[in-house]
Image (cartoon, rainbow, N blue to C red; front, side, top):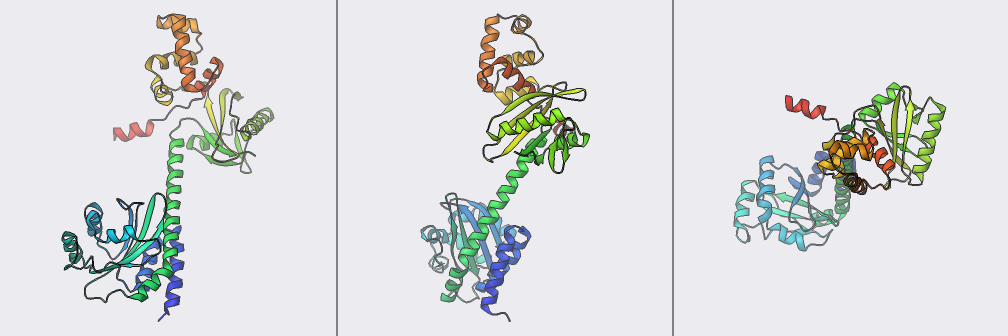
Length: 368
């Protein structure tokens, strides 16, 4: 049989293996179960003040019982009274509060007894500004009580359990955020590229990948965004150089028979990373409804913006809408304020570079 030290070492290894591989958590929980000689184990991640549950990782707990606990019995769990006042890394034994004869919550004990829980112990293993992670160990009535040796094991494993749980949670949050970001970019009808200051392609949405396969206006060469047209390639280098100084650019470029607006938006959170938007000038323009939503325009302002994109002058817009020139100019000032630009020419460029949202998938799903 493995010595207790080997068991501890293998449990710690399993915990860190589970950080990046969720499917390894059952093995990590099984290691904790063996280390404490506790048939039931749960790692609970809650709000910082323990008034709600984010996540429960459990071993040998019935899924229906877990749902009942999370939805109802969590609020009356008497062990929370001990957990709230405990310091991180401190071992506590909750035997008295889960004793049917002395518990302050008889209703909870009815639930606990039905699911084979009599002895409960554990402790906080991680605390930060938004969450608290605790280890809870449960033994049935026909099992021995927790003793000082369990407390010693807890003090040796607590830091590792807390660190692995926190890292796993942070990693999954980052993966979720990345997935949502990519999904949002894929909803755009026009190509979008995330590139480094040297032009290395970091990310492309679906339209961007399709455009790269066409080789115009850009193509992928040795992992970097390039253009077959030397003049166009020089424009790209200048745009990226400007973005490196956190200066955005909107410029008209021509590739083959098509004209595009190339818009560079530096990402301030990541130094040296720029989002490049390609919007075909002769393609579909953003709808009035979309401009209302993106720029918070009124219906009248969205109509004026559409007429401006169509190349109409202020007088022509006033005539088409049967209003005065002064009314149109006032509307344009308000649109420029909402768009964050100062000149009409900048407003026109910005409106033309707005990508439309592709609703094809949504409409198809609704049709089904």
